[in-house]
Length: 340
Image (cartoon, rainbow, N blue to C red; front, top):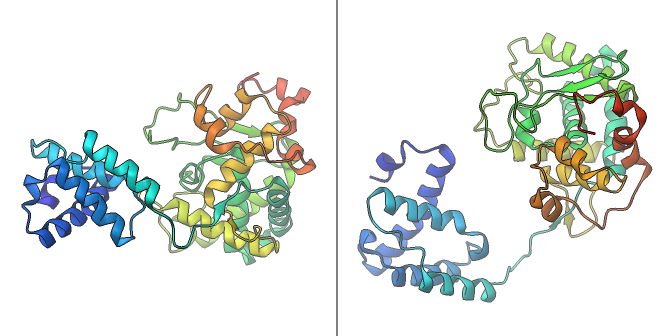
């Protein structure tokens, strides 16, 4: 029944059904309860059961409970994981739970680290022979650099079609051009959406353009069937690929290559590239409207200010290298690409 009801749902919703409902069914089996007769009071006890097992962090378990509620509502039944009693129980357990082994604290990637990775990409991709001989490593370095410079989500860059990232080392104003398709959860084909307008970078990034150009030629020779820019032989990216994990592995490779790692007890993740770019741009200082446009955030985005920009980020020459061209006269000639 679970599979039949959830079959029409998106893959991520199906996963929520499976995870949440399977836990609930296991709980009901232990107590010999009919799962379809579960009440909010039973759901509150279910919360305690989850907390005592220690495998679920109640504070971040909303997808579990949403999946359970949706499952019940698809059957025409009221969702048990909501209401006054359930919410009070959840609030209390959030305060009582403690992590046995706290997760490392995620940090924005510093612009100085991003610049070291950028420089290594430019050096490795400087010649066609070097690019062809180091295709996998060059891919990792380039993907990290592009994600940082564009403040993009992993899917926005790793699922770029081969024609949507172009490089012209001789161009003054369109040395590198990125045309993203995948922005937030809207994956349609309408290009007139915030975050989808072409992002064009000037001659300052000619070294990156050369590396991208040589990577493109080497990848085409090794994998002519590739449909996405950063695919390598044997790979096939789809919307269901875990791009956060994929970019995280590339970031780990890039960090090892430049011999730089986060401080003890801290971690750099795929999300660190987006937050690092936004934080570095804020310290240039770049107008917030340009940061929103570059990263595909909504105008006056509260999420950008609350969850991505770190006020602890210091201004650096590396940050200015990546972003100060947007407040220099050259940017005034690129009104079609960036807002004034």
